[in-house]
Length: 99
Image (cartoon, rainbow, N blue to C red; front, side):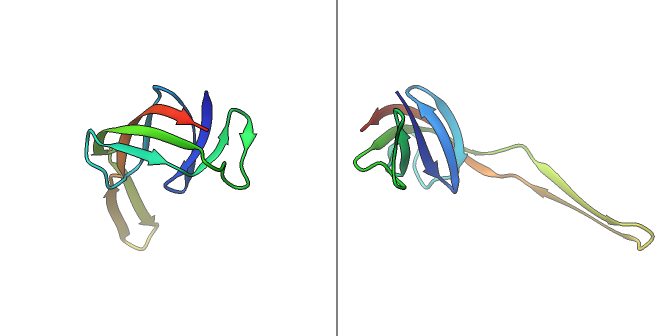
């Protein structure tokens, strides 16, 4: 069974036992979370969401992605800046999809 869920301003195609790295959620490691913003389940589209559909997942890890360096430079102006950014994420495993 496949579904499309919305979380963190993004949409993900999920199926049971799939591991996802999503935008950081305020959930403890080992806890169970439920996504109720389900856009599609088994080719049944919602308007905008499918009524009564839920996707259950467990939180495996909270962490930060690898560092991305942002470098700003203006030629002949003696201007250069370096800034780093590490995006926080939550690793989840999809357990069940229900209509």
